[in-house]
Image 1 (spheres, rainbow, N blue to C red):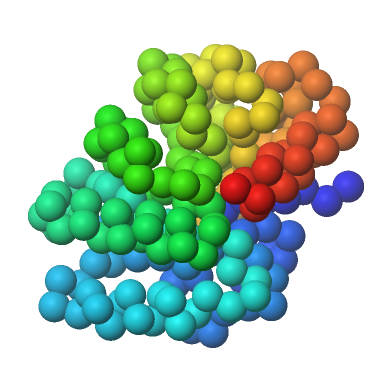
Image 2: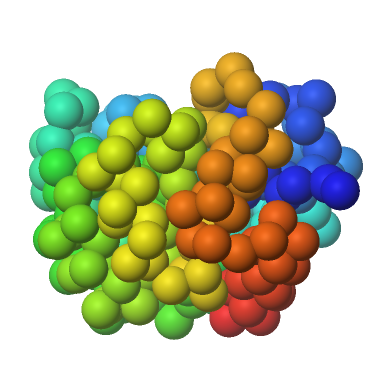
Length: 207
């Protein structure tokens, strides 16, 4: 059985969504966006031109994009760049993969601008934040932390299967481990979990 890796940075993984940083897009699904830490204030129009020029057939999503309280880019600029990417996603009808650090309620406030599904990647925060995101119709993508973080495992229990994705991000481990752990936590078969995640992918792909 193959297991879809929702968000990763490794070109050797073809069954998943590769986060394109620089270079030529691969011939399998990828996402493209301007990460908060990569914003070049003096060069932002060039960054947007590059981003839009790379949206070829296998571009599955816009991202990572979002808000990050730990990067040295002014909030106002981060928000402007994030909003522009949301509007691009609306235009090209692609889901949005979101990077968020200590800015969840600000990200929620941007939901009203999005016509496409929004997915928080690498979610590992407390249950109350998960509940608020789910109430606002976000999807949550979980990574390696689920294997050992008991609090996050409890959060996963309350997250509906039709709102879940699983990813390796930039961690070095086998995605199958994560699928097995989540199938135990959610008390569903590996086959059912796999099938549901593929359904979720179809849902976000179709807006």
